[in-house]
Amino acid sequence: MANVIQQMEKATEYSAVNLMADAGVDVERWNRVPDEATLRKTIEAVEARNVRVILVDSAEDALRALVDLIPRGGAEVMNGYSTTLVEMGFDRVLRENPKGWRDYHAVITAENDTEKRHALRRKSVAADYFLSGVQAIAATGEIIGCDKTGSRMGAWPHAAAHLILVSGVNKIVPTVDDGLRRCREYCLPLENQRAQRTYGVGSYIGKYVILDREDTDGRITLILIRQPLGY
Picture 1 (spheres, one colour):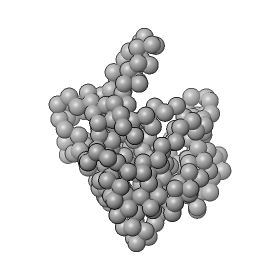
Picture 2 (picture 1 turned 90 degrees about the vertical axis):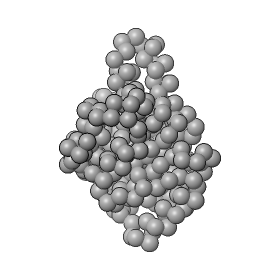
Picture 3 (picture 1 turned 135 degrees about the vertical axis):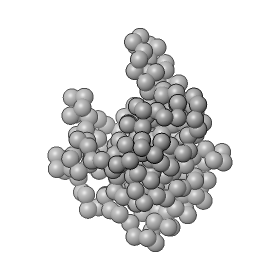
Picture 4 (picture 1 turned 90 degrees about the horizontal axis):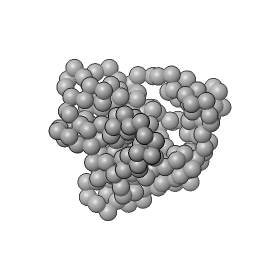
């Protein structure tokens, strides 16, 4: 396992730093690393909403924490696209799959029948372990996510048995309203650039989810990284 989890924080073609110029976003406002007092206040506020927080120093530490959270031997694992997960190196770990997980994404992509593939995608939000990045974390404790179709957001409120969220501290903003603005003014323009380059079509925000409080103990874990990862 140790030799699988090495090198992380890899900037990719679709990392924010390579999309910012064309996206025209306000980096100074929306990509800040908070001071220690704000970070600690935010962690306390998130945990008060029954979301466990694991604070780590690096992308490598984050990947190790994530892998440790998922048991060996056939656990269903699904993830929505996340630049943070890619920068952590999770894609490589999933390919090598040293713990023998059931990679739901691989099951979906291997299905050639369109209707069956759509059905599998709908079921995948109820995987044993669903992994996702986030778009904003309010210092008051709410966690905000958005996407185009809901393929990630469907797992957040209830469907996934365990929800593991990964985020750089650059996602922290003062309030929920600031988080929603971050989605519109920062995340969307960057994602639009990525979608144009990857799929040849633009993107839009079709779904928002705000995690205000979790009822089930131990269901949601936020791995918070002391680095500006993702967007």
